[in-house]
Length: 143
Image: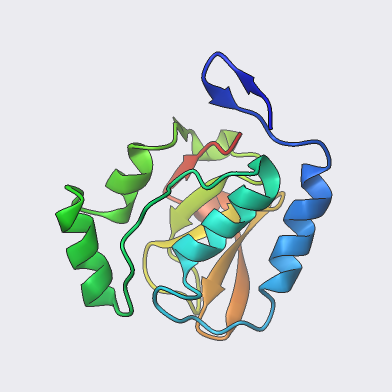
């Protein structure tokens, strides 16, 4: 993993690791704290940059536990948590591997997703679903 003036860089071969990580999540059902949208995004980031951009989250097994954990950390929302760790970018400038947040059919409102091109992959009840990136409300840069 390289770094330039505090910015974590994507590792060589990140494209293949990103694609492999997304494939590994195919068919995985949504489970709070084990296989949820933020966990999916964090896994893709680890594949691309070699580290978790949001380390040390408390364990949770439900939406209520996740919300309480955010409050204990001093955040009012997942977006606030991510803003504390990653730079926002305009949705139109999101590139492959970046994270987006927005509603996705079959996923929870405000679901996190990973940009794969013109589409973003969001984790839904029955596994990943794809949505146009430009339907997202906000985006964050990964590496």
